[in-house]
Image (spheres, helix red, strand yellow):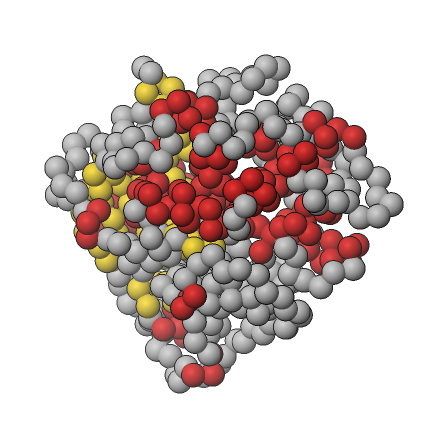
Length: 465
């Protein structure tokens, strides 16, 4: 039997206060570095679906999921002809989604996915499809945790807005006035416009960074470590130190370009203002009041979280190591389930439970960006934490997606009050031809979910912790 092994190198350690479940080892803080950008031969969707690609499922990487890989003895992988399993529940009339999701997974060579749908605050659909861990034949459930990638940003935005609501922060506060304890490297040249960047501008991507011009620095960890003479992994504060040396690509507040930098800075703003670790504040003041109890920031000991889906190399059945990248906590470091995400959406829109944000604060999140910034031609715009905010007959739409190695994530609230979340444990980063096909998978789900006319009168929220 062939075995493909991925190893990691222990490159340093430090300690800091844990914000999560101590039993999980999350933020247990014995750091391991895995190089997620190592050049590799990529298997496309077509190869993954070929006999050779499917055979890789039987000799996939033994991903470390809270236990030592050495403890695994001859794990049993799914047979190539096994049907894609389905787990979870839905109300009557939504059965066509099952076949559609199976077809999408099979057509695009994906390990698995999860989908949840709510209407007017009630959970009417929550199912997992395929495999969370191919080498162990572990199936995806509605409560399976997935890496959320940039779906982490709305949670950071709500934490910031909660501090605004509490009177401890203003949207027009300058972020580097708050972060005076973080200094640029000695002798570094600093763009004077950094002093003008506000909390609002970090939230709506108008802070001055454009990754299309200089690239995305969240993928520069090796270079940053060399430049600052630090051992990896980088902390968010160390990343901000480096970010202070980056020239801005436009004057703050004059344009909007998607940026991870602003959200990493916001995580440090939350820590400084709340006087609590970022993740602790989010857990206590955002997630717990929404009855979201299982979301966590990724561990830093090189292991997956308990009940977390293993992530797979795009277009293949090769497992990726667990993410060890603490600097991305506030911009892309959370893991959660589809049920967690629709709990979040239904709390934000006020259709379930006591809303974490007041209506006044929520309106700040939804309002159009200040001039000279303009909405897109279709009338949508970046909200505070959202890729797209739109309006239809005074009802609002919210949309956010995300992607990173082994993660492709979506959540949306429709003006009708329907919310849905869709998570894949593969990044869908294919070649040019496959990329077109993969994007079709998302449009298929949108079309099906958003085309439903009649919803069952049930609520499954109590069935899923």
